[in-house]
Length: 379
Image (cartoon, rainbow, N blue to C red; front, side):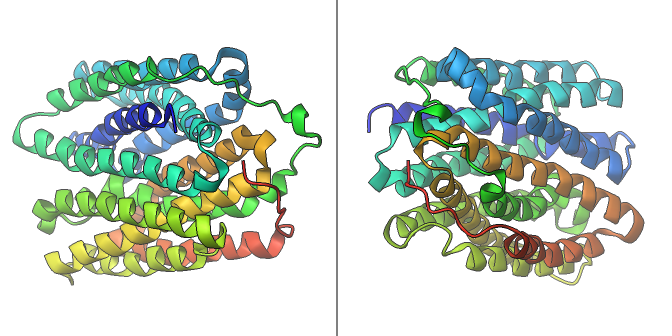
């Protein structure tokens, strides 16, 4: 599979830069006196800019090519992080988050679509699973490393790393082959947007929980602060296992079959997180919840992406990637803002318990309201 190792390396670098700052900037804002809502808004603004960018990426890729779009995305994601060295005032942090979100939106859609372009159809599940491994491994290092450096030194080295790591990913982009994105008109009719509703809502539901946890867990369980970094690392590690395992299974039994199990694991895992936030669970509860959550979220990630590619067909890879990524990133941003708002009013235990109910409910509503599955050919 020529080109795929470079694509996986690029994704790892970009997501490492993203994850380094994901829990650190909200924590820094909170330490500077900001409310839970403001801390959550940092991630929400980032993800809002990401989601607003993503629908335009397939057309941009067709016009400029994968390598140009990915390189621009890495620079926009990384370099603005240096502005955080100057000030943590909301007037600096929120616009910086927005610019970085634009870069992230370009990377997420283009990188997922590129893997689908490069991989043989019979190996697509494992290829997307391997991309998930690269991303999860980067987050397994980046999430706890950012918190650890900020705790032991200052936030300044984290902000520098957040700028440097995505920039280094340009080396992997230079090794990507030239791939011409397929145009929708080549395969006939347009795909109905409703066909992508279920995979988009399913990944959004899991991402609501993920966004709230990664942004606010350190604030929610101050008594177990020493274990938060380990919990975040376990989430990433078990996501890696869940995502690749789901991809291998999907290549054999078809996409979408494991979504209920994955969503169930995510929902159940939020309950011990709520107990930990209420100081009714120790380190074992926190770490066990992290493993269960990561496994479930990994399954949801890969199975929802495979289902989107299947329903879209080979001429609509970009649309499928955009729908999945919009669901992921909109859910991440909404989760951070929603949990921050609920926590401000009712506390973090209530926020986590609310998400436990929403995770299975949202995809169920989408499945009931949506059209029957479009069984297009896999790309």
